[in-house]
Image (cartoon, rainbow, N blue to C red):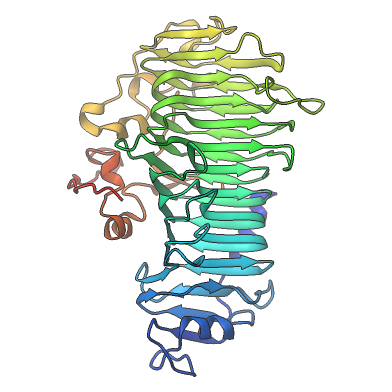
Length: 479
């Protein structure tokens, strides 16, 4: 049902027939035509009917977009589109929020670079059917702010976007439902003084959301703040976070936790993680809530503390009735240092974990706490650990996004062990469309001077059936 709703929503997002308004940073026309564009403020103010489109011509707008009206299901979305992808920059100059939407519906935003905000960079509150594609959001104010903030949103999409610079959370989805985050990128380079932790994504008190093929990395030269990857959480003042699907994501250098499901109060259920990768993180996966969690085909390559940890926050909170930590871990690969599977011995909320067909290789200890060796634990049924022989000499960290020959067919019912993140997920379904090179490669290179693909892959030769081309390594710049 969730996937059907998304498909219907995307069909509804197709262009409709409305008025068009062309704007330019120096525009002063009254007709808002392509030849005599008006100002951004004028164009936005005039676009109040379903199907209307505001076209932003190239340049830097020292102003902001505050959405004045809604589109409709029948009449179409109101759209704000860059004429040339990434060439329209809406700059808050640290005194304005570049994009604000409150209590509106059916809004579509594409190709715009938002930056330098006095709060969150993109703020969406109490809305439905909101669509961001190929947008950038750089540098929030110094506080509890997000690059993209979706708060009380029903049915939303953030796709092929990039967040960076300073932020508390790159992509925040709070008290929302049916929001999709797809193929987004962020590099954590600067946190806020409000907290010691920066997050790639928080699915906070939100349910039925989809997080697929996102890539988050911390700048290894930045030690001032702790970085976490994808965080599913609920608190006493939020709803529960249930039935979220987290597929095909890559987290690098999380110096706390790459993936977590946790709660300060609520009983969670039905969250599903599949084909996710953590590389060089302190802790790969923390299971701190959800009584029916399913984690499968997880690849954890080097976790300095633990690869899969189970514990609750019982020392700090009194949970609602029915709270427990349980679920299934299967067909996953844990490699190099740290403890493999760890259950906190004193945790009274722990209700058990079915853990089968996982592979532990080169760890400090396979099991810790209450977790012990089980004959059904290992992949290839009752064998000891298999050397996965990830081909890092050829592919670099990209090797961990492939299933090596040694782990192919070694899982339950002949499934592979570990993640494969080379094709795109779309609406929760794995397609045959290549994920690499990164879809926003050229755009990100032009905006912040780095190649996303080079950050993982040494080469793509041999990755796809038709082959690939060797990568030219760009100079990575700090931003």
